[in-house]
Amino acid sequence: MAQAKQGDKVRIDLVGTLDDGTVFQSTLADAGCDDDDCGCDDGHGTDEGCGCVSGPLDIEIGAGEIFPQIEELLIGMAPGETRSVTIAAADAFGEYDDENVVTIPRAQLPDDLDPEVGEELVLTGEDDEAFGVTVVEVNAESITFDSNHPLAGEDLTFEITLREIV
Image (cartoon, rainbow, N blue to C red; front, side):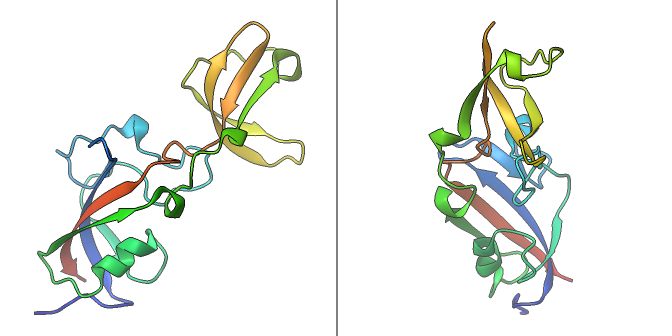
C-alpha cells in the first residue's frame, strides 16, 4: 500500500483539541468545534492551524501549509491510517506573555471606541503596524487589550487521518 512522503499532496481529516478536551479545530462537521475559540486568522498574524472547516483538508507535505510536526507525522502514513501528535505551546502559538497585555487610557483612544470584554479588534501602532487584540477589561478611564494569540500557552493535540494521497 502507498505511503505518504515528502512532496506528496494529501487529503486529511483532523481534529485539534486542548488539554481539557476542547475542540478548537476540525475538518469533521460533528467534532464539536467552537468556531469562536478556534484561533482563526483574527488579526493575530497567523491563520496556521486555524479554524473549523467542512470537509477534508488538502495539503502538500513539506510546503509549510500546516504545522511541521503534522507534516512529519504524515510521512509514512497509508490512506485510512490515523495518528496523533501533541505540539507544545512553545512550538505552536508560543507561551502566554503577560507583556502582551496593555492598558491604554481612553484619552489616547478614539472617542467612538466602545468595545466589550471579549471583543477582538485590530489596532494600529505608532509605526502604522496593525495587530490583533482581544479586549480583556473596560472601565471609564481605560481599556485593557491582550495581543497574545488566543491559543498562546496551550499545548495542541491533533488527531490526523490520511484520507488519500492525491
